[in-house]
Length: 182
Image (tube, rainbow, N blue to C red; front, side):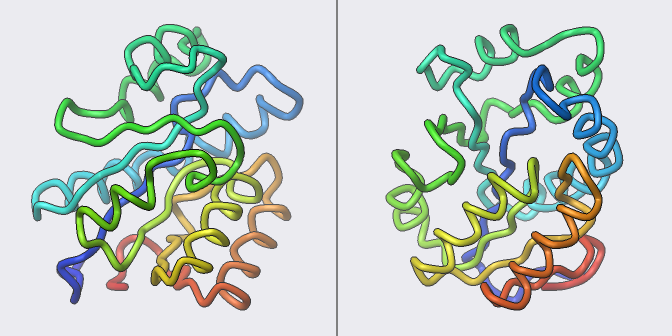
């Protein structure tokens, strides 16, 4: 991957700490496994080059931005290895969200302004809900977007492709794979 042209990038990792205990959760878990390696590689690259990594996650009724407690609440036999690979590092940012968008009811926009971020790389699940709603809110706030097609997953492949198409056509997001430059 080539170094981004702007020093004002941030990587958002959305809802990857997840229990998958809901309708279509098994399907989403299977699709999530295929995006793990590209997200981990992208995170490694961003961290190596000094870009901020921001996790935004459901709070699972804990209402505490404590990723260890959220991991403990979510971790089970089917997702344990996945969570272990993607969990935040001590120097990553971690925010909880009450609804689908990472911007709604969170300090994300304030944090991004503090970090002087202009361009967002959105990754995570579910592509057709939380990633799409976050992309929409980011676009309305004037952020440039890259949503690598190999770094988001939805319960169905059709829903995921529809979300990518919407983000590309309507929100002007690049949806090139993570191995390409933004």
